[in-house]
Image 1: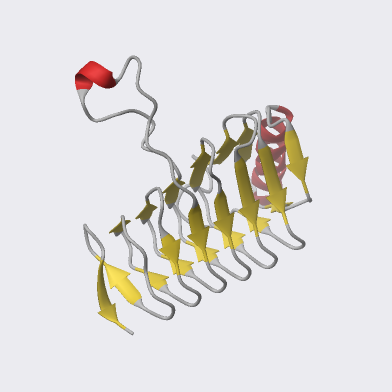
Image 2: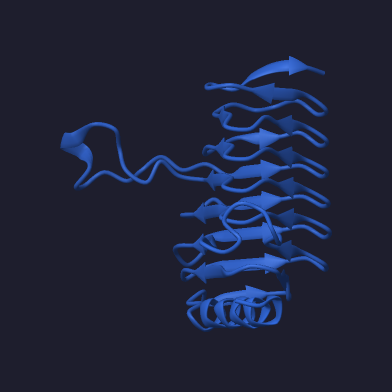
Amino acid sequence: MGVLAAAALHRLRIAWYRRQWTCADVRGHPQLRAPVMLAGKGRISFDGSVTLGWELAPGFLSGYSYLEARYPGSSVAIGQGTHLNNCVTIVSEGPGVSVGRSCLFGPGVHVYDSDFHPLDARQREDAAPERARVEIGDEVFLGTGAIVLKGVTLGARSVVGAGAVVGSDVPEGAVVAGNPAKVLAR
């Protein structure tokens, strides 16, 4: 397949995913460089210039990013100048996920404001999951495959290493890595 044909096919793929969006309230107009699905009954907002996807990075030809504000009152807010690479997943079930300005997300980053179900098998049918807001400060960098769990605040200019699982707050300017993520430098 030639370069022009591949580019045309990629544009069609982005457009097809765009037509599948089910989010009740999308605000702003992100630049789409790769397929993205926006879903849910809540609000997903993009403040100014936000870029979703990156050419020639993992997941560019085979994956898509997924942002969901699952219920009315759920929200995902992405700040000006932020760039989400390919295959990023952000899901809010209520309290919300807020991403600051000029952040960078590597491929395959996941951010959740909910546990989605209780750990105790006997409670999974009836009990509500634990939920807590996620706040990601300005100029934060999340490496490939990082996971940010409910209730976490990532301070401005912090760095989350590839594959880290972040379950507690990260101070401003800190570098964290590992599972569970631990501060390596400040």
